[in-house]
Length: 211
Image (cartoon, rainbow, N blue to C red; front, side, top):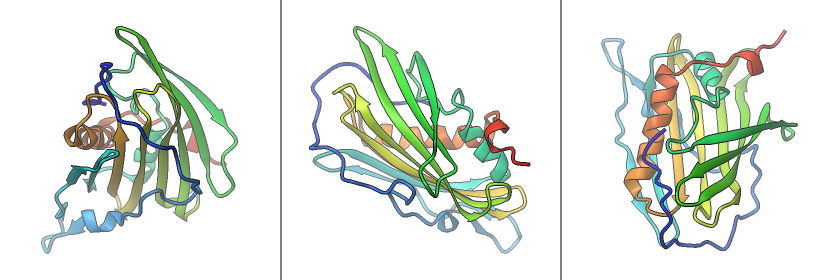
């Protein structure tokens, strides 16, 4: 994944995270509004992405149709090599017991080695919102920076994946970040890279193979 820069310069700071139930979306989006059927039976993404900034963070929101099954895309989200932020040199994954109501929990430490070594941890929580883990129809994934470098004091977002037809999945993502040398374009770029991974990345089906 691209466009998140980790050069060490002046940074903004936040007061910290609000208490959040991470089995519920951090941000509410309806993926079906980003993926609709045309009169000829084809699928289109009618809503343009939005991006901007506040005093505390940069943000972007985007969704579209991806011509791939929901299970394939969910498999990609379990392949950490495909989900790796661009610029990261290496990472460590800890798989822990998921929260009640969730299916999977990943605690991932990312490491960037430039003039100094920068580390931070992000938590990824997967929840099947409709269907079952064996036959999901809608999936929500929250990601949130929880510790590490002061140069990324805040980063969180929500991914929605919803099957709208066989082989067609509606994707919607909200990304918010406060990091050094980051812009709204970077927040949007990270979403575009996620969507590209969903469309083209290799799935890891092992964590979602159920008897």
